[in-house]
Length: 397
Image 1: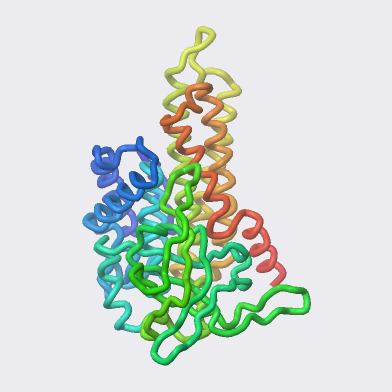
Image 2: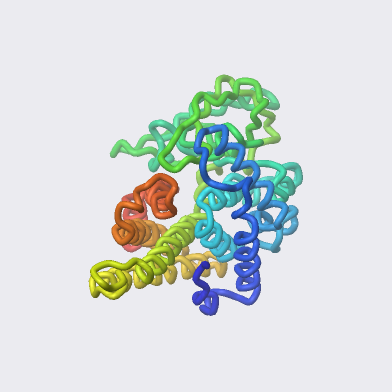
């Protein structure tokens, strides 16, 4: 079961503890059911399972924590600690369940932050209930970590905008009911050092049925999730679907990421804790050379390293979430949490794999699945190297 000693930390309140307990009970009872079983990893099967998970999470009232109560959600404000607790719990049980939950929040976050009442009413209650799947379309083939270098453009045409360009590595691409798309509404300004200024980017809602929108290709990865490349060719959308003011897109995107970056660390914690729990159970029962694997000093030293690295990452994660929720400076704290938690989780899972030996690399084993799941977290929402740049910048500032 998911470790819960941290629930007594001063970073968390009684409502967080109740939510964590409810989520753990739900996940234990629900994610073991046949419709959510691991096995077929084809695109069609993963898409179907992801849709079912969004619906189940919505029915359970868990996705509602990605939306404010005024817009059909659970609590008055978006709460980073609640999102972290839910992601840690879901990741311990099932990586795709964590993905389904997280993308509902990330895909709709810009709406919660900056959209007018009409847009929020149109989309957010359906997100909270699991009736609509959201997606966050920021990355491009030549603008991943360097968001300001994006080339996708939106040109005003009367009461509409015409979008042209490509987005790639888009989570929920191909299954989303709407996409939060970021595009340039003003030409890029290039600095003397060749970098781009972030001004002139705006955010829009695009629906799959909009003329000129297409899913150019689905992307298959080592840990299957719905991912796609999107194409916009004179894609016409109403100006009423612009999120916030024209030119505010970069700020909206960064505010969205500030809410959810710490939760990436929380997902890594869930993966690491599951690997650690599986390793502890294994070394207690695995007999070799007349003793159990857990009797050997090398094993105990490895477990000590694993336990300590998980706890250190967890402290950073919930500190960052607490800072965000209480109005503290969160940018560096979230970057530290994301960097340390994902890197530590990779090491924990790798050491668990060593303890399991050959069995761990067999397709379908829990540790094998965790090994594939954790690798992406060190890259998306800012690779480890990008987090170092952010931390360094904040230190010098």
